[in-house]
Length: 461
Image (tube, rainbow, N blue to C red; front, side, top):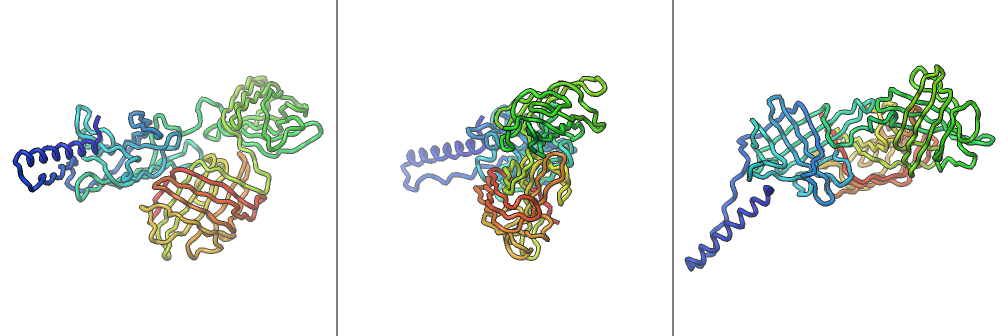
């Protein structure tokens, strides 16, 4: 199937060849006639303000390209009209983020030839392709809630058709999203999908951790108060693979004081089997509780370990950028870097995450607005709100590093000194920081970096 730009290129080449032949046959010296501008495929006669009622994101292999994975985003309004957008994310990367449709690698323009006319990115009305999407920007964001099942989605588009000057197609959607072939939540077939280990200590003849497991909605808790390992097992090594016996005895390869759910029903006998491949764990529980009822459960994934050193680090998996617009001659950006998705404690703007999180309140030059995105540069942590940089210090409520093991209280460190460097290539960002100074927690410095798209949320008044 020819793409839109291939169709136009072929049409132009054919016209050029025809004009050249005509000139040769006539023996003229004026050269080929000018190539007429191709007629736009768009049928729009005015700008469109679209009001989506539903959204769907599907992994679409037909849009794959070397190094990129294809997706089809569909927004539908109350009348059944649709905006269909073909997206391409880097292989293995999240599809959420900003897409600039002036960059050829980010969109697949539509075509208008063949039986399956209008593939790729189009605005549809009355079951017909009305306008190809050939320019503009799309922000596709996943917004964490209090728990994974509360996650919502936000889509904001400002598209252009192929007229000159172009007509615009704008839309804003916030709510649930149907996902097919998109990694949205942990595996629902696994009993537990979150795990946090804390309180490592050494005793006579064994070392021990406390571990909490929970499901995707934080409603099905398994707490192991003492997960006992061999005395040569170190905190840095993490929990070793093996079979652990549920018992009242404190010894290596045993589990003592294990309870589940809000009633804290006690597990009296059984085993906990740990398999491990690097940082990936598989834990299987086969036990009997205090009422002689069988209890079986499993966990698959990474275990989040409490950091007890002075040196903190974060390896973010997602980055959210909330733009609050211009104030006092500066543009205000609230940037959140998340390593594991959720914290059980609310942050400064009411969101909840799990794992570790870094917030910083960035002020950039007012010339950088929401449409431009976060600017490049090295931004210093400043003890105040004036000037370009990151508002830090004890009085900066929104600039902080939060770390916690699951179901614990977060350790909050305030950023007081250091630099954050932001580099970008189009919508691909590199955010790095080395040696940010922290105050108010056990950790005194923070390092980390992120590469990938960022997810924008427009909060301008």
